[in-house]
Image (tube, rainbow, N blue to C red):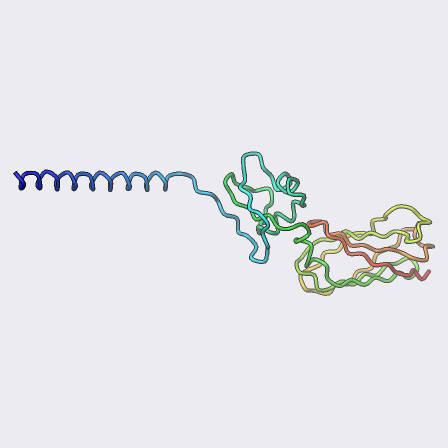
Length: 195
């Protein structure tokens, strides 16, 4: 009798083991078939204060707005070359406020003589296009005047001359600003205008 019980229980054990192994294999195959979260190519220099999983209808702008950031900060922290291409399930690094603008400002000098403003820049951390604006620092002439744009390559010195608008030609002091058209970073210098 003992031999019969031993045979039956060993057969049940083998059957239970086989069944358990089959169930585990089926679960593994099912897990592999489920959509996996897409990980962003996160910038290794980006400090993350939070992670965010992209949901249907999200954009870098809407996510950034929810965290009090600019869309460019989300894009830079996650190395997104096309900030409008997000995938549902993608995990994004949320950087601290102001992180994306920390290294953007390089060196800038400006001089205004007569009807021309000369701007020299160097040491910027990436290639960007910058809008160049000027205004009367004393406030006698109101408004911000667009002088043009500068393409500033990464770690390259560039000098460019811009015509000064007629309205600013008698202003003794000027504020000349560069505004990054991608990140909205701003670099300004207060200068004396030598008519």
